[in-house]
Length: 497
Image 1 (cartoon, one colour):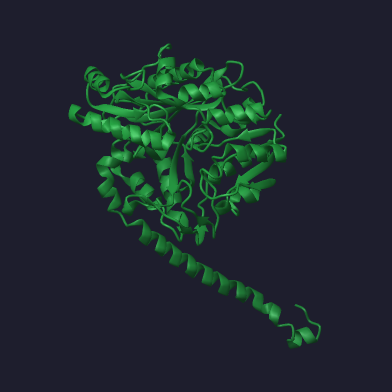
Image 2: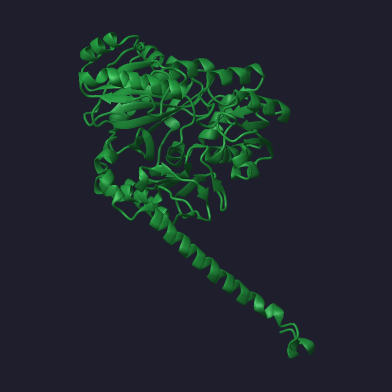
């Protein structure tokens, strides 16, 4: 078994991993940049080591520094979380060469699935539906123009070696193709150091559905059903839920089986997510595989009762997966809202500052995965996500109402957040009826932003918190007053009651 785990990450995912590892009796090693010196994941760890610097490149992306700390601390395993080095095959190779367990798949699987064209070639050997498109990167514009005509517009120009919406451009007519290819190449080079791009048919108004899989080192693979991730902006997810309002039992079964085939195609090990685009007619197409834990994994945990981080750690330690497909019996409905430090009214610009007041909601069926605390500085150096609020209930309508209630109690004063925007989405009629796809925010953004703006609501919350604090202080002083009456006649005469 793993005895000491280094978490090569920060924020809410580092806190999340710490909790599961501690329950398994594993000692925790944290790493931190200077802005994160007093962050919760640092304070919760058994040991913490500084990564000199502030930016991601200087700190959490410096594999040399992290490996040096792993050796110094005596860690026998490294969990990468998500983002940063989690899908860096060179990092995985270096970890293994150092004799340390990597909590995740083999570097070969990361390399295959990290390259969109290689992934399409690999998956095409199995019975997995693929979106029409190229299996090799574009080498010249003339080739791109010819291929686009064969595939048919609209076309997506996509980076071959990256994700997250970077290096991705929609082209609806042939006269915009060359410019889109050039721009995508520049963006891909800047974001991933790889300017290769390819073409793919654009599916209008699709649903973004992903399937959670678990696979051990012995070829045993299962899926834990789907997550609906269609509420997204600029390809960044905002609200996720399970089960999906779109899927029928038959479609769910077919997508789960396809996800298992994708994992098998690259001899996958650990927890992973296979992403699909789906339409209202029951068609679905393989999009990509994320070879790591997903941000939205808690909704799967809430309905399945399975701790995915614990499964990751058991599989990495060489254990057999203690679950079969028939053991997966989801219960109820779970929905998650990502809480970002950003101003929706200002084109979702990231916000920095001090968290002056913090009140995290609670109650039946509520979970918060976060890495924040009161008086913590939110810096400009990292992703603006502060955490995720998750609600579970017996059915979708009740789960939405529960999440909305919890969000109404959530106080993060001192910075702008996405909390009011998430509430506006939850209360939208089409969302409540389950009638939404990946174009939902594009269609309804103006009406959603017409709700009370985030800054005003946070200022009101800050004022309310200040009033509560003042009243609490007066109340506590009143309780303490009797202690000041030690010189009363009753006290001097020896009477104490």
